[in-house]
Image (cartoon, rainbow, N blue to C red; front, side, top):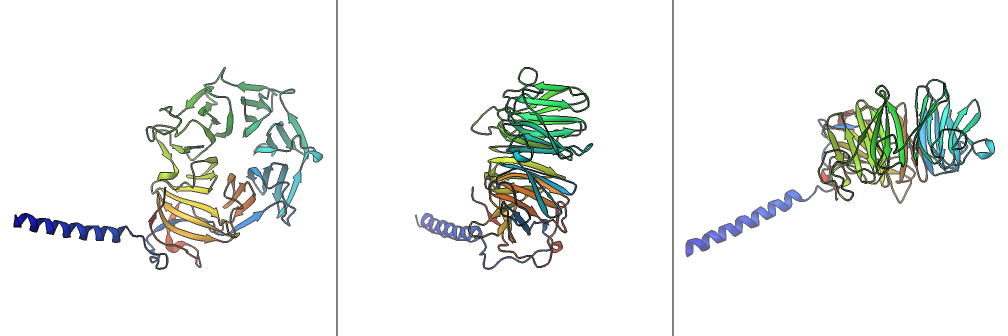
Amino acid sequence: MFVRKDNAMRLTQTFLLGLILFLIVQRPCSPEAPQGDDPSVELPFLYENWEVFTSKSTQGGLPNDHIFFVRAYDDRVWIGTENGLACYQDGKFKHWGEKEGLPWHVVAAIDVSPLTGDVWLGLFGGGLSRFSGGRFDHFHQRNSGLVNDVVYGVAVQDHMVWVATTAGVSSYDTVTGEWGIYTEKNAPMEEIWCYSICYADGKVYVAVWGGGVLEWDLKLKRWKAYIDPDREMEIDLYRDDGLVHIITTAVSYESGLLWASTYFGLSRYDGRHWRGYMQHESGLASDFINFNKARDKECWVCTDKGLSVMVDFPTDTWVTYKKNEEDRDGVAIIQRGMDVIRTVPTKGAIPHNFVLCVDFQGDDVWVGTSKGLARGIGKGRWPGLKQSKSRAAGSSVLVQKIVRKKP
């Protein structure tokens, strides 16, 4: 009896001591006493300086602050807005509307021909347009093989132009004048609402809203479909078995990697293995993704709650850029998976956290949002990760700790 009671007391004391130690370990480090800058920690380059452009900018202004698409090519940046086309060059804007010959005012997609320099425009409700030599040529359902006038995406492949519409895909051979049409009748489309399109390494990739990703092999002349294998709309039943969801919003391909964004997360495919990312278990700012664009082995992800970047796959390192609600500046958040390892204030910020598009001009990054356009200055940029001592001197660290991000 006495032995059992004594053992019970010791067990109680041991439990209480363990509980105290657990609470001490779990308590996050205080922001007022950040950890030291460990030079062995490898970190990504951060865009800490941002320049913002709106319809009120002194450089000539944008025709509208709702930016649907941005395409940087050589020394020019083409911007598609809700009310016209703009071009930024040599520090100034020039823009075109219907009065200047633009066939339709809503420009939803842009690509540039590397052979001719022609600018191809996807018009949301107005078909397709070619801007060449100061003149706009107009292609629509009544005068061409364009399958629908609601155009979401444009991709130029040599002398071919590929167009993603709300009723399938059209291709246009600018040399022969021939059109091709791909719908559920001659392609594995479970849906025909095509949101995005890109060309890379001899293949055309299409993001289909409700139909996953389609791949057209130019050499073999055949389609291949990537879908969510578990076919569950509400959840991703089996992790990394394929696309996280079949409602895909954008697709990009670079350095042997296919990236597909959805309204329920992001997918990465290296030709053999899939990897899915969702906000509750990664560095994504949100699962609601409008667009993605790959650069090297990075993926820049445009969400409704900020701009997230998958910087380094092996270490699961992310950076998210957000605008502060109370001022014009912003913040860059570095994460390893769910763990926030550093939060850095930025000078200037993206104009709004609802991000719609992104592209790159050298080391600079251009970001389109629902409230304006921004350029992140990439002077001194390095790809991937470097030791923290390699970061630019004078960088101000707000919080320098490891803390678990809330779901």
